[in-house]
Image (cartoon, rainbow, N blue to C red; front, side, top):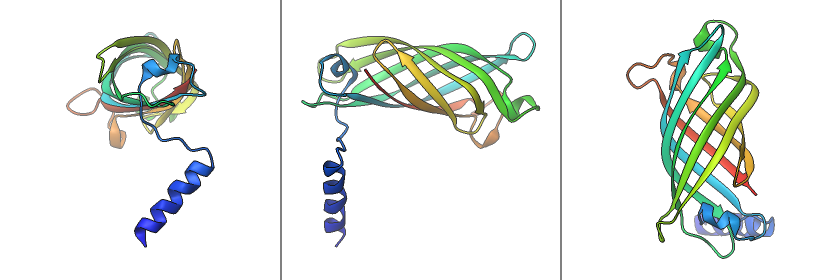
Length: 176
């Protein structure tokens, strides 16, 4: 019964145009129809007070990316670093539960797990208004494409940079 149920779900996804994610970022440039890069990473998000109500962000993470592409491409590892700013820090600033004008410039280095070829992308993660430190949605605009994602940092509303508090998970998708 369970096998039949899973087969039905897979058949519905295929019929609806669902794509199995199974590739890497260098495939974004191959011209395949609508390749979608899907990444998930884990790392840290540190913040420090800036001038006035400005907060300075420093992020880094490592993980993997897949691309929906035909023909399928190998999974790639990704290493991401970046910095930027926001106005306020939501609940962590003791004022409004939102941040505004979030803008983080990131550099993502993708490495093909088969060929070991690297591709570097410069991207901007931004959002006008968002909750923090609850899962924070992001808009992604980069040299390989644009899309959306989320940052889940300072888990369980733990503000500050001590101990495990800056732990972060970043997830994003983009398409050229």
